[in-house]
Image 1 (cartoon, helix red, strand yellow):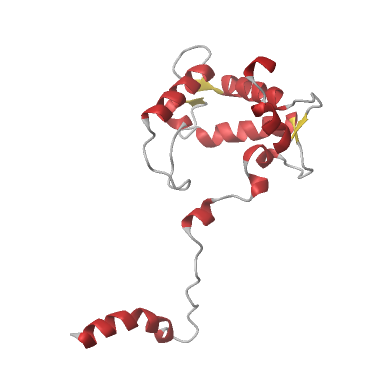
Image 2 (cartoon, rainbow, N blue to C red):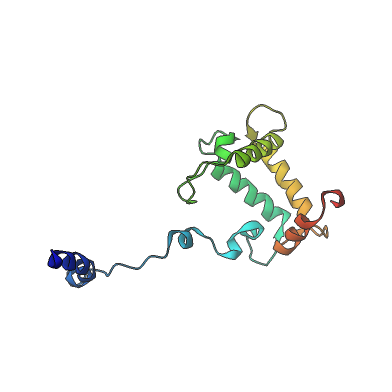
Length: 161
């Protein structure tokens, strides 16, 4: 029995040595969380910085928002349902259902986007919210935003916006 247990423990260590000559060695893959996490320059507002100059212009923002809408529109009908807007895909690594609080926030956000209250969000409605978000982040009103400026905008009290 002891020999069987010892063999079971040593077999995984010996498998790479048993590979045929010329077979590529199995690459050590980073943890799933590290694989799915984009670089800091590709997260948040800076993912829309197309020319990589350190700031996002309104034109870059619009192009990014249109591309985002297209990615979210799973059935390509030009409208987003609440399910499409908040779909959790395996690529994101989160297949857990939202909590009641998250679901409530998602519903409230969807209702805010759906200005004509027809149960779907059109590109026009989606872009209008995007324009409001850009304007809110553009604290100095120069038509360019970056991460620091957006953080500053989010830290301001609602009354001072």
